[in-house]
Length: 209
Image (cartoon, rainbow, N blue to C red; front, side, top):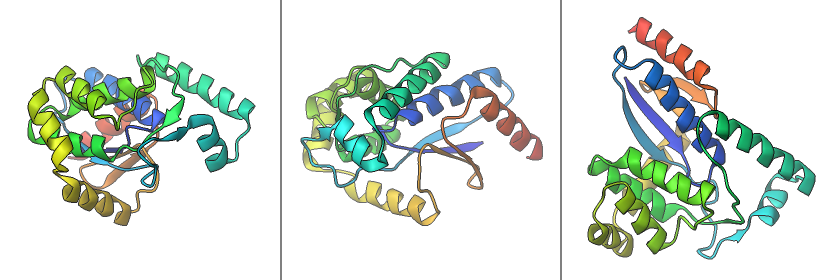
């Protein structure tokens, strides 16, 4: 079963959705074989390298008050805790394009899933900049990738065209929000759903096959 997990490192619900999906897969272990590929989506493609204050950015983007944003953060923390993901303080929003390039390369090395987890924790748990070269290298090493090769990918701009092409493909396919989980290229599950939702959907799709 092929799963395309379309997401952005900057998306908190993507962290919830990934952990939730993995819980569902653990429950189904042995009955369904899956191949997860992480596909790029940028929530803020025009974000400058130095980023922007998170509260100002979210308030302007969603028209939300400080109280509404605080309530949303609390919901996220609770939903994250329920699936084993710890949210910390995220004071800035940064550009994630280099993170997507690195994820593409990690996929070629068979370490994409490990890097995705490392990046999500770096940003959403520790509040680190996922566009920083040092942060990216640290996450790559944590994921089992070589530090020197990682710096080469970051500094040379490798895989930019491949990431842009993938982003365009999924935008043409109608993906406008993340996480979007596409199963066997035709079944779509949107959002950070509970594990039961993923488990039920995967069982039904497997039965159809």
